[in-house]
Image 1 (cartoon, rainbow, N blue to C red):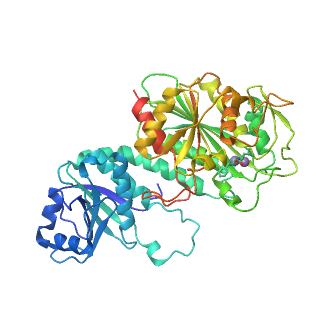
Image 2 (cartoon, rainbow, N blue to C red):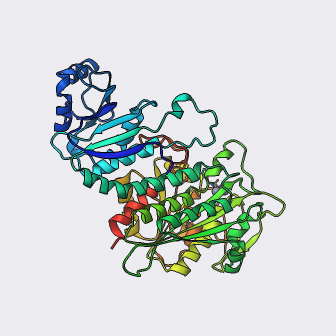
Image 3 (tube, rainbow, N blue to C red):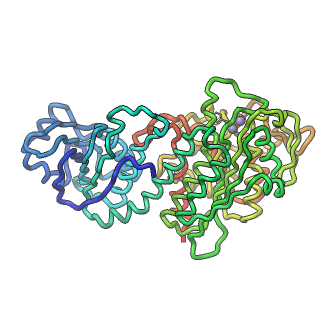
Length: 497
Ligand code: BES
Ligand code: MN
Ligand code: ZN
């Protein structure tokens, strides 16, 4: 992982130096380990809290420099609110907000994970660590002139916990998920002149190191398979298209795999139906769905998830050269169904239609979940808080919604129905690639449903959450890595041995 902090765990009692972070619950009450650390400082905390009107509320903090009586540079007391009510997602946010409060020149940081009335579990500590890691991420590889504080050495962060061995074990599992999120963010942030389709495919080969089987299909193989809908999108680009199949077999059984499919348009100009100039640079992130699938496969494999999983991504560049696809063209998809191209900018569904069909035919999966920055319309409907969820399966939908609430990567179910389906019927072919002015995210999903047969399937439209979404305590990156934690959680809850 592009590592910006060095994390480790140690056991109470804490005798740290440098910068020390303590947690305080509502009423400025502390856990025993924090209390005993503060003994030499007398009533410092009481007086400082009164002066700052610090009450230990969630999100608030006290920041004291060279505190009298303590041999430390700086003491930060972070409020957590009601200690007994903290959930995993709260610990993630807390880790992120503590990371955000550290000065950029921080070298040696100790966090005492103790609270009054509760035992801070190993899982909570690991979630806190994950929050710190994700907040510390920054994509700065193209900044040649770093400011002095950006060049500062990676801070060494020690988390003091009750059970060091248990916390280390919990972090070992969580760290892989963090790496998966960071990997997804890196891919989304990377510009399209660097992350061409062949380069994207090459980068997935790194997953072999964690035990994922990686198979790259080039244009010759895709033509042989009949993926003309996908190939039609890429034909206006100098860059060749690719499909990557990633397999992780972590289950003892040879059960059918769960399948994740991602839209990987490395750049979406719109093609001949070209987009306007303003904001077009954001279309380097039109592969956020594919990035999530790669990050998820990394996460599952590195925490050795007891599940059989496949990840398939369709990687193309949508460009308008002399060989580009035209409005009015008719292409035959791998499924045999024909598609009239109305708008070359509705390209994601063309890519996914072929990859969904291929995933279904080859792997007979238990379910398929696809992720795609598919429509601007989903942002009009749901903004940047929820991804749109479309599904033919209530159980899968419920599980995704629950995982969304647990991880903070929230989804909101949208409708599918025969009436909407009719809107993608075509005058000249089996279907067309746009559905008219209204319900644009729904007609896009209806198009996809024509390629999934009877397989339980869910489509996540992540145009509003995959990139350029508002910053949070644990994310300051343009590419958010959205979906890795969500899907990892759902797999862990329901689909492992
Ligand atoms: N990649 C875009 C959707 C998108 C827009 C993602 C903004 C993230 C931010 C997609 O390929 C697209 O262009 N969709 C069109 C569909 C339309 C032509 C039917 C759209 O949403 O306008
Ligand atoms: Mn488009
Ligand atoms: Zn697109």
